[in-house]
Length: 73
Image (cartoon, rainbow, N blue to C red; front, side, top):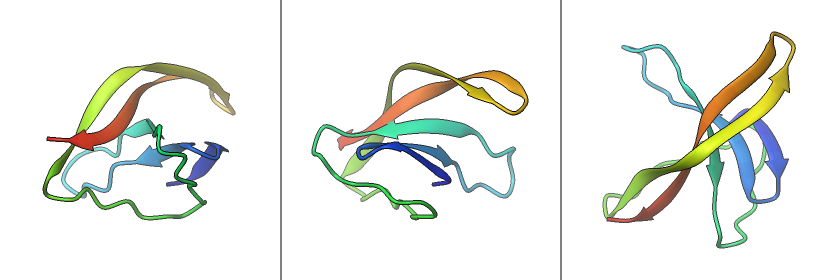
């Protein structure tokens, strides 16, 4: 996690050394608070589901990233 947008929304990067790191917007409806540099591990009984696209401005211009949430499998 590298930037908290709101209490339950944060920009995160996939930690996969064999692939390019992909940025996502992680969100939840459980009012779970995120914090900068937090590491999120996905429990075995849950999955990541894409629920939309998020647009934001960065130093390099406009970015579009998938919105994801962690849900029961």
